[in-house]
Image 1 (cartoon, rainbow, N blue to C red):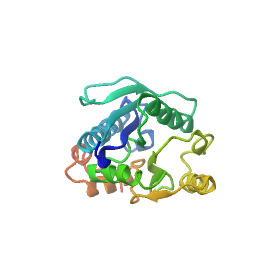
Image 2: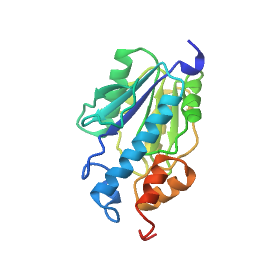
Image 3: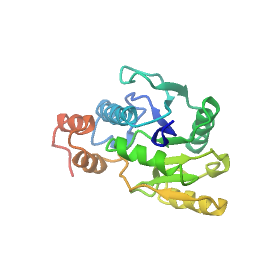
Image 4: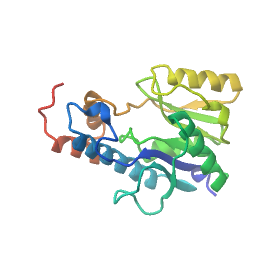
Length: 217
C-alpha cells in the first residue's frame, strides 16, 4: 500500500435535517436554509474525502443517509452520550473494522481539500497524532496512528480551549504530534461568508449565494 493511502478517512456528521443541524445559523437563516448549508458542507467534505488517497472511507453518521452520500463510503452509526464519546467511538469502530490509522474530520469545513487530507495521512507515517486546529479554539481534524481512548475521554468540547486541552493531553502522553493549517468551522453566518470566500467554487459557496445577500453582516 502506498504511504499516502495508509490512513482511513472518517467523517463524523449529522444528517442535514432542518432543526437538527447548524442551529447557530438560525437566525439569520431559517432552519431549512441552515440545513441546506449543512448538506452543501457535507457534500463538499465527502467529495474531498472521495478524492483523497485513503485505505477506507467512512461516514460516522447521526441520523439516516440521504442522496448526498457518495458511493464507496461505509456508513456506521454514531454511538456515545456526548460529542467526545462519539468521536472516541468513531475512532474505535474504524480501527476495529480495519486496523489502519484513522483520520477523523467533521462536516463543518467545506473548504477542506484532498491535499490537506492526504497530508494528514502522510504525517501519521512520522507522528503518532496529527491535529488540524480550528479558528474557534477547537480542532477540525484529528488523526491517530493507533486510537487512544484516553485522548478524548471526557474532553470538554465546543469551547474556546478545547484544542488547547487536547494538545495538553497529547503532550502529557508523550507522543509526537504534527499540526495542519488552521481552518474556520462554519458555526455562524459570519463564518459561512468567510468560508465561502475561501472556497468560491464549492457547493457551499453556491448554496450560500443562492440564499441571497440580504443577511446582516
